[in-house]
Length: 404
Ligand SMILES: Nc1nc2c(ncn2[C@@H]2O[C@H](COP(=O)(O)OP(=O)(O)O)[C@@H](O)[C@H]2O)c(=O)[nH]1
Ligand SMILES: Nc1ncnc2c1ncn2[C@@H]1O[C@H](COP(=O)(O)OP(=O)(O)O)[C@@H](O)[C@H]1O
Image: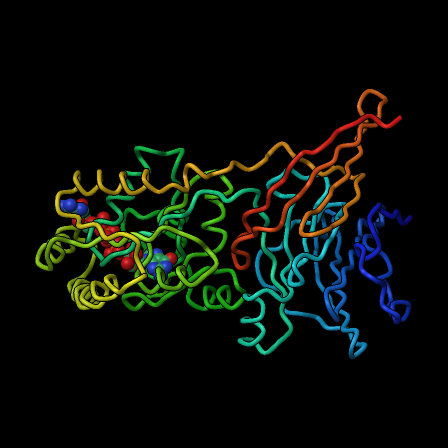
């Protein structure tokens, strides 16, 4: 049996002349409740994007195919980013000509809004890089979320020590972005807590698949921040702390992730050397390599426009107090609008878009009465996007009334 969900055909856009030559994409949402297979189609410029798959727990799939109206051919794109887990219903609306907003039904607000980027700056760049048709998923976040904090500085300067103090004093405020690395674990390091220790070939493949926000070769090993590492912290409602090298900081600076960048340095090179040796975690050869790299990192750290603040870690307690001051002074904490966790898009709803405002009309029945609620989703100030999250969605409850 095929059920048709409510929703406008191609969301208010004119159906193309050759629409009836296009198989399977006549309707914006089709769901077969027996096989749990679904299909959604949206037109953006000259292409029809079809999102399809199965929400059956045993099969769970979500694929994208594209019908190019100019050539009359189907394309299977390279799909980057973490895709949503399938649900039984979707609405899809084109937004800003470069992405499709997918509203998942019957999910909590943190999982309701997804973007399939089809022609965003990130996707354009990836198309060039890969020489292929590319689309990319990114999760929509209501509000801005707190700005992540990037902490960089030469090895042995005290980054880890400062971050541990912060996490210990403010366990519910801050969360650590657990990086991936190909270096071997140190004695007390736990996989998944300090790092995700991994193989080079696996990590390189994951980087190619767009799973990393940044990655760099540091002291002869590959290190990288996965999109999930940052977003797991943000999804838990915490402010994310990244301990990454200067190359990584530069990459994050040029990515879509807005962050606060802090560079830590030691009072002198001799002191840095002393700390590295007294930590006793590296061989002499590794210590030498880290010290050689430190000079370049110190120069890089001072390059204009990269770091927002530089802190000298001389006396640990003084430096820690200064770090706390910086984090409190940052006004993003005051601007933080918590995610609307209580909002849920019910199965029965319709969606229409006008001037970057999306009207969601939801019908729910309570005690035999049918209640219609209207929500306005504002997509006019979206920030970020793939390979991370699309932030800045605003949702307003505008009306609620009983159907007569
Ligand atoms: N670019 C990048 N650098 C990282 C990442 N994780 C750790 N690093 C950096 O890699 C360098 C070496 O880290 P590690 O092996 O833990 O040694 P340590 O800094 O001496 O404790 C440090 O400068 C870290 O900041 C990451 O995900 N990306
Ligand atoms: N302000 C400080 N004064 C003296 N020793 C310090 C200070 N900060 C950190 N340390 C010590 O220096 C060593 C390196 O610190 P760590 O946090 O591991 O550096 P990083 O994470 O930057 O590589 C550790 O043994 C740590 O206890």
